[in-house]
Length: 97
Image 1 (tube, rainbow, N blue to C red):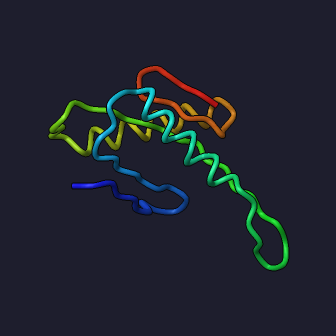
Image 2: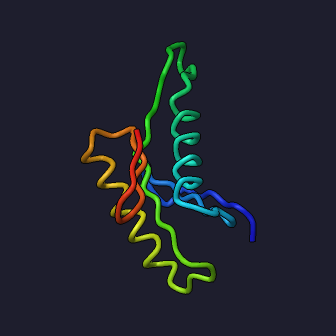
């Protein structure tokens, strides 16, 4: 399948990773994405910075319910937002900022 990214709507994006071996590896990817998004960019002659609250859902290989996976990631993302933003949270537990 390969890795994919898509805009879900508004300011929400979905990143699908084909081969992540552990929750630690998933958190590392989330941290790298967050750091990349925080790099300043220029828009209209002004420096801008964005941040991200990242929710991660992990399932067994061959997960057959993508809607449940997305719902779990969404729940984790809202948990990250409640924690003060700029954080990665795995559904059901681990987090980093």
